[in-house]
Length: 113
Image (tube, rainbow, N blue to C red; front, side):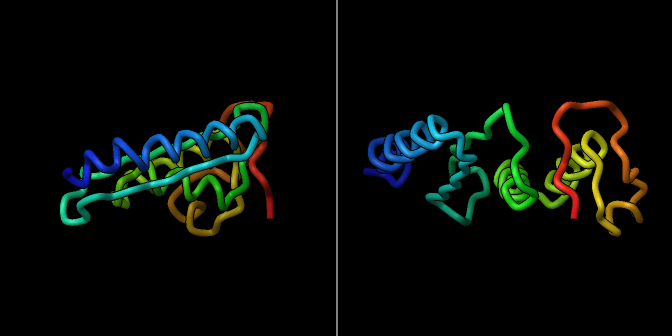
């Protein structure tokens, strides 16, 4: 079996079981698996983020990092988009011109430090 076939047969179902249980409990969950680290698209991501509550800053960074597939620009764009929507307290985002206060009203607020 190829690494991808092993992932599909064994790992993906196990991750889905864990993700489903986390969803039932309202736990944010993210997992990234690469079966060939020399090729950036040779992997998969399984994630769940509850829609009824705002994840912690740590969990958001993990989600954005997983979604970016190693692309720093993609990671930063996701973080900046979230900061514009929910606000932030980052000196680096402020230097990049991202407003501290949300640009649009939302019911879920970003955690402040």
